[in-house]
Image (cartoon, rainbow, N blue to C red; front, side, top):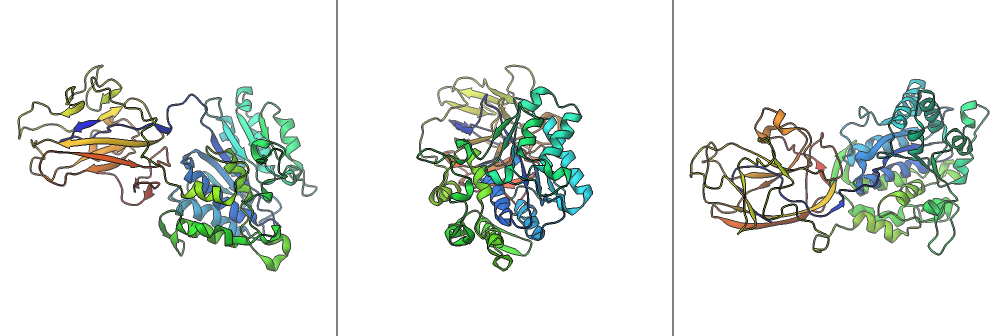
Amino acid sequence: MKINLLTACFAVVLGQPLIAETAKPQYRYTYSSDGYNQDRDDIAASAMTLALLDRAGLADKLVHFNFNTNFGGAPTHADEHRKSVLETAVLLGITKDSKSDGRFFDVSESDAAKKAAISHLSKTIRSATPETPLMMFCPGGVQVHYAALEQAIREGASPETLKSLTYVSHSSANEKTARDSKPEYMNNWARLKELSPTSTFIDSTSPLVNGKRGGGVHGSQDHMAWNQAPRAKKGGVSQWQWLKGYGTRVEGFGFSGTEGEWLLTRLKAAGAPELGHNANAEGDASDAGMVFSQLPGGLTDANMEEIKDYFMKEVSVSDETGFVPLFDGKTLNGWTSAKNTGEGNWGDFTVNEAENAIHVYEGKDDGSEQPDNCLNTEKEYSHYILKLEYKWGGKRFAPRADWDRDAGLLFHVHGDLKKSGLPLWKCRSGKLRVMLIPKTSLPHWRFVRSSWELARGKTRQRRILSPGRRPRYGRTCTY
């Protein structure tokens, strides 16, 4: 597609989405990390779970995360586990402030924090529908899940809502959890099923989570590559060293390094040999393996090379197969103009069929004053590869006739641009922008062909993009 860009900023063309238009349900995710005293693997697994969701472009679908859920009090490693959740979420760019984010709950912090976690999860459960179902990961005891489900039912959760819930476990030990005589500790996997028999339960016996390559089912993800702990007779973090090259460089909380190097600190922190063999969980992210089994492109029986490929492999944009043009070359059907109303009114944008291109201000006099405008796709997209060609014309228009040429490709736009009352480049609706700036003042065609993994569906927190990488927090895209 060729586009004559002058001074207008607008979204141009989107390639075939990896996850775009689809009639399939869009899962939202919850995670409840147990954090019991003798089980330090959560320190590694919670961080790796957040990294997986971020890598998959699903961090915005994480709607609830509770941790340190030892109802009997704070686990001995609560501080390290807290770092693995709250600090990882910030360093990976999932949130700017995990403490005020509203999705993260340290259950051991206080009785009020526990009640807040249960109440929030209950509200999240009640919001589930067949179109927006919930997948709830249970890497430990289900005490918070049970209490939240019980409250949701008490407060009127519909039969349709309960059918929209999927619970996932990978360990029979977790499913049988009943730690002591306290009533709330007796709520295990079996009782959760009794409470909501119409919900879907994927447990440790299911090949959907623990399936072997050659058939049959592993006892749990503990037996697979996600667990590299010495207590499993493996080498700890030695097999995870490839993470050093993963992600962009981040700084914060006294740390400076790549995202992968931060994850290595969490994998290392899971080990505590001084507390005995059972506590030495260095390199054990087996609970994250359960999450991996349910993600697009994930595997139930991944080896370390496959885990590495999932994190490290870049999206290829060299293959033309599957790309869908959003401009038909003849009309602007499927597009709307931000500053014009009425069907068939695209304002300053016209189609030049001979060039198979969209023109801006075609036929307008050089130096004349022209308004800014924006051409938008009618449909919404979430995860895609984007390609376009553009060309600068020879005319200049007021009030920017003497400015350096620039136009913007806006994407992941949220909100109504018409209601802002501001020039489009100052619009506060969520958006990301790529500047289209010529190398010379002469008319020429340029081809833009890169991939961006758009990890957040909501760009309330704006990010800067690098080709082939997830968007990172940095300079704002507010103009």
